[in-house]
Picture (spheres, rainbow, N blue to C red):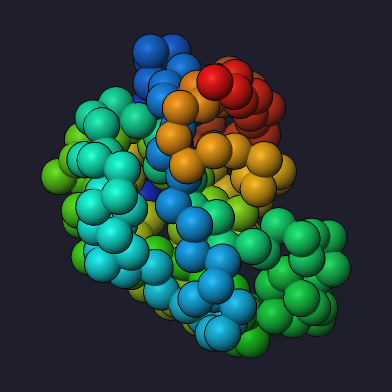
Length: 180
Ligand SMILES: [Zn+2]
């Protein structure tokens, strides 16, 4: 879990996120088909709006999980990250969110974002703009989320309780889903 202070000064550290924000309805946005065709696929606001057309508006206070299909590659570094050379950040390739998606999620007043890749920003990102936009709005991130293929597109409740590390900018988190 990335706490909001990860990329935004003055925002909550991992031990300061209220538990009310850590137990929340899950919205699952599936982009497996698009990501299979492009390793650096940017999940766009259009993908989010398509979800809303089918399922209704993304509720305030939810945790929005992006399902790219990348979870099946873990822990194969070459497949999962794009490179298996330790410390090689020049050849990272995996899907992530576009800036307009982050901005729309801020408008929807969600509590957290999750993804089944190593980062909310796509592999080649250098400015980590998605982290910046979300964290500045007090939204936390869940990365390397496992088993997202077992979640329904809506109706599940997530319980995501991080280790309560004093002043931590992030930390390990055990995520449990209650299925409808
Ligand atoms: Zn992160």
